[in-house]
Image 1 (cartoon, rainbow, N blue to C red):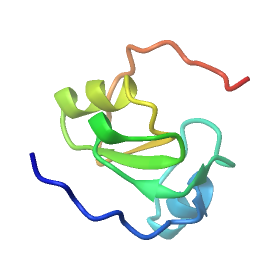
Image 2 (image 1 turned 90 degrees about the horizontal axis):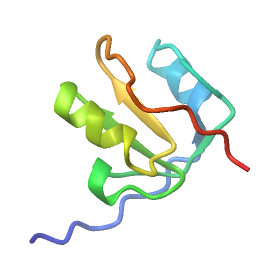
Image 3 (image 1 turned 45 degrees about the vertical axis):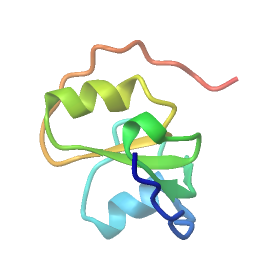
Length: 83
């Protein structure tokens, strides 16, 4: 297994990142994104990417705070509100 160096912090809100990328927010845009990771290594605050259905399913079950997608995906996971 390869160890990857820790990326520098993002420090964007989901809405701020969507604005920079000319994207859309499906949920809470005020979520603070502080890092980036693949879904199976994601932590709270991380942004992850899903390019196809299998990656989207993995991203949905991760603890990542946001998922960046390039097209339409249908969520099958229940929405969980932070406590």
